[in-house]
Length: 234
Image (cartoon, rainbow, N blue to C red; front, side, top):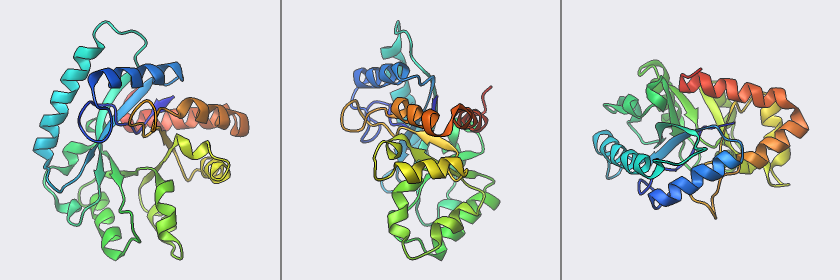
């Protein structure tokens, strides 16, 4: 499996707190059958810039690579960012430098409130003016904020790709909806959104078992194919 959302880089955000923790997270991912991990450290415009973020990320990658020397059974790692929405994002200089593996895709975390017309205009401008395709991070986390609206449907009608966290498949209260989203194509990507090894660990191994049992291996194959297309790998 390919993990399209994770926080494995040490000391970048509220994810891994050390290179050693990062190594353990990656080892556990491999043990669960994850072959590729996309690192998506949080980017918040408040108090940061693209330049400073990328400098910090390069330093964190260097620390991780040193910690991985001599390690075996480690997934392939690619880099991007989880970019939190802000007003003016579509005009922000250099935002494309935060894309997934230097592709046209960018992982976008939507606001945790009811979206208004400004939000949709910004997303539209990202697509048509900046020529980027938003990958919507953990779609399931926004549905509660959009009750009484058609905002989720409106967002999905745009040229976006929805990602869901594996944990959404693990609860009896959300598993049915998660499976429906996968079967009808609403969600095309999976991520663990792992931050550590205990409270927010790797979940894709268990999630894959559920998908295979309930929907069949074809759905997993389609998710992997789509993930490779977005990463720009074979």
